[in-house]
Image (cartoon, rainbow, N blue to C red; front, side, top):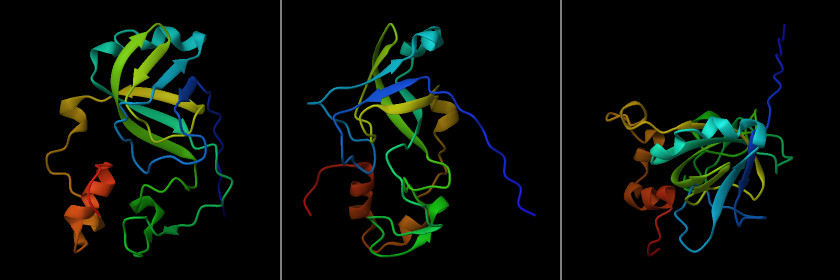
Length: 166
């Protein structure tokens, strides 16, 4: 017997980026371009005290894809190795929900200026959560299957979005 529960989520704002048709795989610090979030007026009071945090989580809808997700994917840095979608950062997921950690530059009313985000322009925002150093940074975290790669150090540069020589 298949049980399916549906949820209704509300957009709380929009994420604005320079990306229309392509976006980076992970958030990349972009100094030349402007990235910001505009919170809908009815939720504007929710940003009170947010400016005291250095990083925030953006939780958003991956609304630009109409492809059906596969449960096995081949991430761009996996050198052809298939992994489960839940073992990847693939944007093609059973529920089109994205998550990015971005640097919070400033809050001006309902406009939040951020570092580079890996989302398309006018992406619907579902939620913001503060990144709290002692809760969100796990000292014993690892890189899972990515550590098995023979050129892990090079792959780590791609994953982090750090420019480098190929």
